[in-house]
Image (cartoon, rainbow, N blue to C red; front, side, top):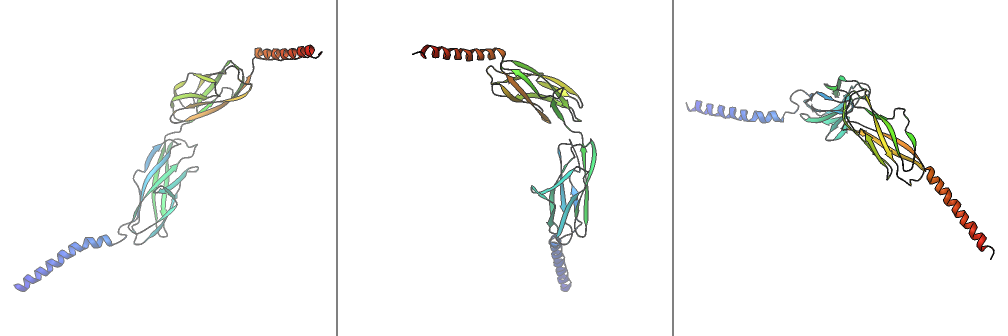
Length: 277
């Protein structure tokens, strides 16, 4: 009976030791499981001018250190960048059992049409290829153009006068634009106003005419001056540089000539008067 009791005690001790030791041994076994390249959110929707950002994870489940090369098969004109910890990479070395977070940044071509596009990305080693497919849903793009009805961006004005300039705002994108505001950067002392000064909504392929009134102060020196007109909202902006040639008024010209003639007359008088002495 004593021998049986001792045998049971030893068996129970060995079983308990094995149960406690097994998890510890399992944690030390590197590379248990299959390698994987996964993405948390594979489908992202954005405009054509925005960057599609995906959060991916690469797991090395092999039994040894691996060197992974990262590649993407994006549509023509698109670009793809891989980043880890803020640094751009084209590949990385990973120890067995390690998981690495990777940011994948996809930029669409400027002329891309709205729709859903698939971007396969792969992590390649000497013995394995891990693949995951990203989906970029392009909902359109914002486009804006500021010009004049004739395309001419120059005119003439007389000092001290005001000039009305016709501008045209065009929505060249595929998405509507809302809350467009107009502004101007004019030479010092000049003043610019717009009618209307704000466009509430402009649909794709539509345009709206704007009247800009530019006032030139008195005594402005004759010459060429540039005023920069701008239309913008949170999604798009456009600029137009308008050259204005300032001329002096006819009255100012006559006054200048009279001053010159008067000066010559005074000089002639002084010569005649004091030249005889």
